[in-house]
Amino acid sequence: GIEKFHRQEFNAAILDFDGAIEANPTSADAYRNKGLALAALDEHHTALESFDHALGIRPQDATTLSNKGLSLFALTRTEEAAELFSRAVELNPALAEAWNNRGLAMIKLKRHNEALEFLLRALQLNPDHASSHCNQGLALYDLGRINDAVVALDRALALDPGLSFALGLKAQI
Image (cartoon, rainbow, N blue to C red; front, side):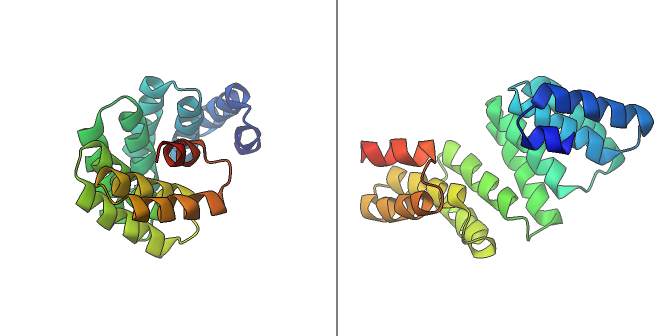
């Protein structure tokens, strides 16, 4: 299933994850991976069910909490998503992706200074995380710090030249 997921063959990956779940109904990883594939297909309500199954098996899994938060975020349930991202970083303070996600949620909630704090933490953990630089650029832009926003967006684009959100935001500036 993982190989199909990485090839973006999400429906086929889901079938494989279902087979893994049937073979081992206590596999939190299989449920989490199925949730990721469903989320990649924008089937976030169903993804939440898979993430909940995974968390029922392994409730302290910071990665799954963060993944579930992303599906909640996609469903515009931002406050709930932010709570899960906070729990994820409490459980695993070294999980850069969860810090980035927490920062993104704070941007959506118009809590930009908190967002910058969380994004800085994400970048301390993973300086090459293009999305964190991009989200930092968005927070800085929203705060009217245009020059700083451009620097952050340039860093994001240096790491990932095809990062569409960074390209779009930079074009607006």
